[in-house]
Image (cartoon, rainbow, N blue to C red; front, side):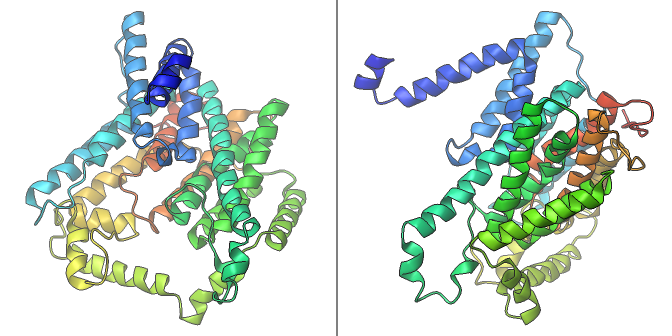
Length: 430
């Protein structure tokens, strides 16, 4: 390796390949490692540093699971719950390109990225231990993303850039920080999707190390969401926190603690969150106006072919004729609009069939979980994250967003994997 470092320009790639090979060997023996790394990948956005790394990881895990099954002589796969309806939805959505007006916006992500990920996660979510390990990985990944966002703010103010532009910017506190992520809204809503599960680890009676890691992740994530100035992110974060407080036995004490933490963060973080929300009421918010326009035009496109849809990429193509100032391939910022316009009522119906096992996989009646029972707490955490995710999908285009599909798979498999008497009463359909 030293010789390669001195005389070969591909040393970094070789090091990554060797690390991946070593990790694959370890995962072959301990599949929990794959669950931990999967949780980390879902919220860390390593694709910003290594493009395609998420897809490569899940493809590698699929190969590892196949090898493990060959060694054991058991090639049975868990086809139940979400995998079948997801396959039907993906197949129809991809086929809709046959009657699309154009193929410029045809996207293979559902088939190439989403379906294999669902296939892998169905196998990874096969024990309560792996659920716990997965969310420990999420906690580490959330801390990684949050620290990245916090660091960008620190560099911005410590470098003197803020002082240099203060005279030319009306309100410098309106600056948004999102680290290595491509968009503050995507970062914040991805983090809040998994926040409930990490809070569940923190509030469970698990080991002190796991609870400490989870607590750090919760605090830093809240700080990162606030610094992103994402209104949807703040609302989904609020949904998760309130739903998790609702299941606490000492909810008033915890509510007071959370309120104090938020007050401290709001007082110390260099952001104007109230001004960000007040801008909506002022009527001067271009973002909200544009999103409303996209929504109106999207539903007008829907009526062009309400049954089968305009074909995949139909919205991106049609919006260019309505709002010509938009960049090429602009999306609707609403997953339901994307599905309805591109795939019609058939695609919407198939997507609802995907969500049925997702909601049935969790208990919606148990609002007094036992902190000593990690299954109880995980159910509460998954439930809060699912509600937040559905809200997020109505504010962003996420038909083929891998972290959301990973979360759906976890929820759908929870009843199958962790069902216990008095904890989870609904069973995902096989």
